[in-house]
Image (cartoon, rainbow, N blue to C red):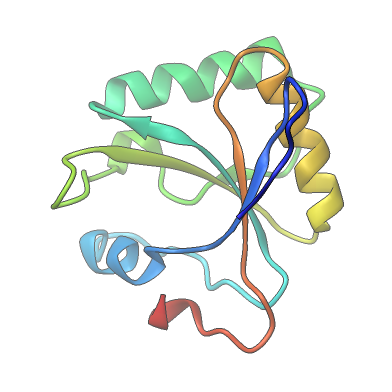
Length: 129
């Protein structure tokens, strides 16, 4: 994992848990991830209500940060992870570069929100991770 040591820094990780996410949410059409896809991980929450409140707060307080980006799983439809019993708020960034994702993440962490950049490297199948 690469992580900035500056205040307001964000870390980079490889997307993980996508297979489990898709298996838990069979009632949803989760978008396929292609190589180079960037995802913002905005944290883990004990309830989907808290997750929804956080996502709403971010979108309304900082509308210039997000445009066409959307939650991989809407907070209202989120099911918790079987092992941790937590909901993860992941924002899909279609067509944005890793650098753009990092800038968005730094803006959020600079305002006190948790944010990590996850990406899918070339050659990896999201169903295997």
